Image (cartoon, rainbow, N blue to C red; front, side):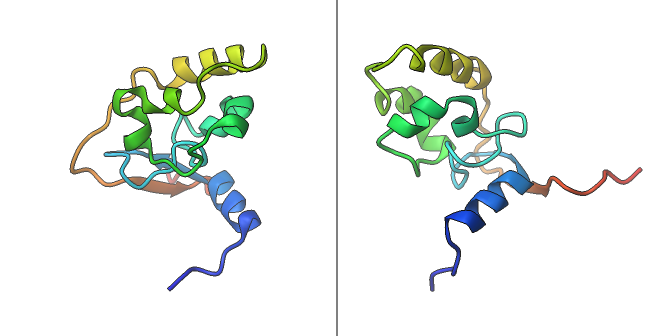
Length: 112
């Protein structure tokens, strides 16, 4: 059964959550806020616009840096800084097999 959500609903969810990726199996590489609380499409909007695989998981995208194949070759000068910024943000990302993603609501205070 499909969840009755439109694009705005998905954008609100992604803007309101922070994802700790674990295995990265179910986390969206481009849309989820898994990179220090932000998403790849916010770090590299020109690459998101260009990519052929907007719904790829973190696990699949990071496997052999597959995400690069989906945005290659560079087509404009604005893509170069976007690529460098995204590469720097994700290059040392560890994936932990058998650990599920942890999603936290961004808009609540941390309990003390």
